[in-house]
Length: 348
Image (cartoon, rainbow, N blue to C red; front, top):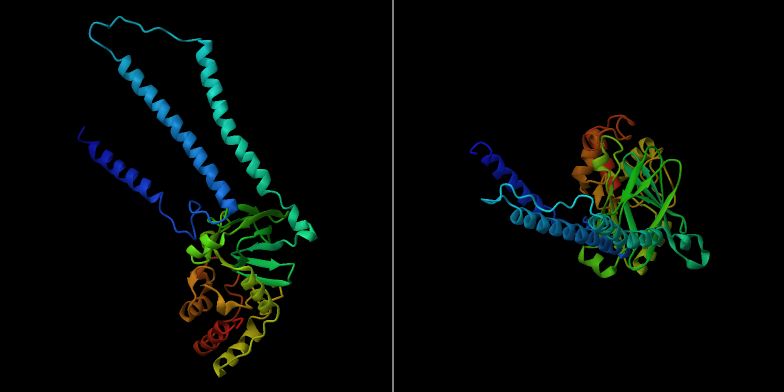
């Protein structure tokens, strides 16, 4: 007994920790803290399935304890044989019908929500004036295009609150999966077909979360799969319209000699892959509003020091990314100039 007692204690400790950690989460990155209509529906299904599971476990546990106590071996009853119920049609019907009823209780809202969440007819109806975002997943970054406005950006998705946003999802290289945990479930991005769905963000709950949410790739896609993050910035409709107008008319002007030198380096080494116009697609992330973003490479805090780290050695930040080795080495002065220029790429 003494041998397995320590193992039991360790198991109990980790079980308790797992129970408490399961409730941990931030409003910007937790499926258990919904911020929109889709997330609310999916949360209701989570609660319903959890309730059904809990009821089943409790009922089975009660029956188990009852049977163990009632039919335990007693002194003088060694030869007593309880009534056998093998072949009882009544019991067979009961334990067949009950699971079917439980499955129906779960299936009806699940099927209903599935069809509702897959309804993207509004994005094809010109009278609806729906906001559509075309999402393209790359190794290991995200491109967002607003076809109704002629705007292209990357890594930071900007959306208005209190309305449905319709997404067309596709991948440029391998399968990825688009997921904003706080807003709704994940959906695959494939290379050979477009998947579509919609999400929404409640303005009040979005404000409580700081109007910034984390998005993830939820499909194993390579060495930097876990680092393939993006951010979602939620704003009012009026602020969104202002942002669109700025992206449509973005013009960058260098304010220092160092930034001017960085612009020249960018024109020689980077412009072939990166666009700095708000309406241009490119084979690498669009940098029109790079200076306004919340993260560098989707994961690093947006500081000049981290940008320099990324430019010096991209592979140390995101292994197997396509930027590594695509340009010659820059000396320290050139790095300083390029960092100055890139941090200056803002809409204001």
